[in-house]
Amino acid sequence: MSRPTLFTGGPIWTGGLQPRHVEAVLVEHGQVIAVGPREALRGASGPSEPPVEFDLEGRALLPGFVDAHTHFLTGGRKLACVDLRSARTPAEMVERVARFAARHPPGEWIVGGDWDHENWGGELPSREWIDAATPQHPVWIHRLDIHMTLSNSLVLERAGIDRDTPDPPGGTIVRDADGEPTGVLKDTAMELVGRHLPEPTDADRDRWLQAAARHALAAGLTQIHDVDGWASLHAYRRAHASGHLPLRVYAAVPMRTHRELSAFVQEHGFGDDWLRWGGLKAFVDGSLGSRTAWFHEPYPGEPDNRGLVVTDLDELADDLRQSDHAGLQSIVHAIGDRAVDWILDRYAEIRETHPPRDRRPRVEHAQHISPGAAARFGPLGVIPSVQPAHAVDDGRWAEARLGAERMPGTYAFRSMAEGGARLAFGSDWTVAPLDPIGAVAAAVTRRLPEHERAGTSALASARDGVFVPAERMKLEEALVAHTVGAAYAGFFDGHTGSIEPGKAADFVVLDRDPFHVDETELSGRTVEYTFVAGRIAYARESEE
Image (tube, rainbow, N blue to C red):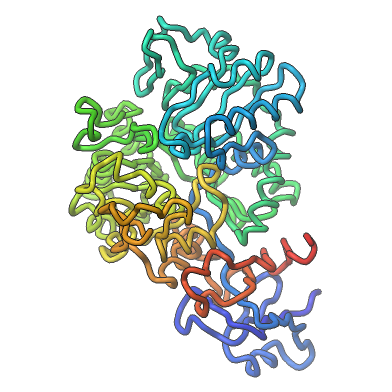
């Protein structure tokens, strides 16, 4: 039987009930036993079994971070894929693809990417850019928001996509002036290629899970929510059954499979304190970066474009009602203001017409909201599951997409919180980096990247490089949203998310106290240790 451990010797923020700043935490059998004054806790376990002390040496102890929105196994896979996120020019993008192809055997698919055409002024890439470098490699690389892909000619030929292929409902095949496909596919059109990818094996997914978990633990994450579907859920169940699930997981599956999930819950329940399920993911619209987010008013300069509805709304409304009757959670992607209003209206109808219960419905992203929408989330009990990193990413070009008059409703974290909403922070990894410290800093400062700040004083949305400064959050609010707030979004809050007696000893140790550094230095904090159930799951010293 292991002895209890006393964490002390540095600032401790519990994230739970007052007081939130304490001297010590006592842990035994993976759970928090007590929090409070150091001397009082030293004797709390009894004289026969004095605790072992973990000296923080001035470093800060916080609840482990929780990421409420990831594509986790996809991220694990992409750790070994071509990386285009930081490519600043078309030439750099092409050169990276060419280098990657040269290192891999002919016939192997090149996927991943996370390219961003806004890095070079907004020109969409074309298959012609990469064809010469990839004559024998099928290429299907995503834009960082996962709402656009670029394929080379080899893939278009395999998928049977040519000038005569019609746009599928909810999707777009981008074409050149002559009507030929450029290789860029938007939203549901991506499925025309996706169905041709080789099917991963269970062993592949198990390997991706472990790679992603190592990456997450090093970032201070002790729990993630994954929205990638059944194959991922089965991978988590395999890992859990074998004792190899390194962190806690809430797994969601597609809304269209609500009947299967209902039957699964009847057979297996909702999981346990390590692995839970019960959420259903659906989409209303696309993304701002792809100009497919659904708005009430058109995009500037595109009078016929208000975005795309990527699903049948009547079917989705029916699925929402049926899944609610089954006691399942709705997790719905909505980015444009019209999409957000639509799903809030559906949630309001369900709340009014269905029996009361603990629903915790979620709106994923909620990036752009109409006037008055911020005050609706709290009274409806709807969780805005938002990603602060997207705010500073999109802040570089959002005003050009939408016009200055719509900026006050953009990434309105402060307004939603003031309206009583319980925010849940996440990353949308791999759309944005798996970096909870950076996300907290983004929510608090809303500062654009250094190289993007020149000229922002001319934008209504940014003053001195700060994107919509009225929507900045306080540090403690942001930390709550990335810990117990995110845990609440996955029904994990009774066991995780804060440092309180009876909860799991899931902690992160940072090099310095975030409450005692300048806000501009928040993103520079380093994860020293990550604890899951009281055990060291990551130690920076072992990585050096």
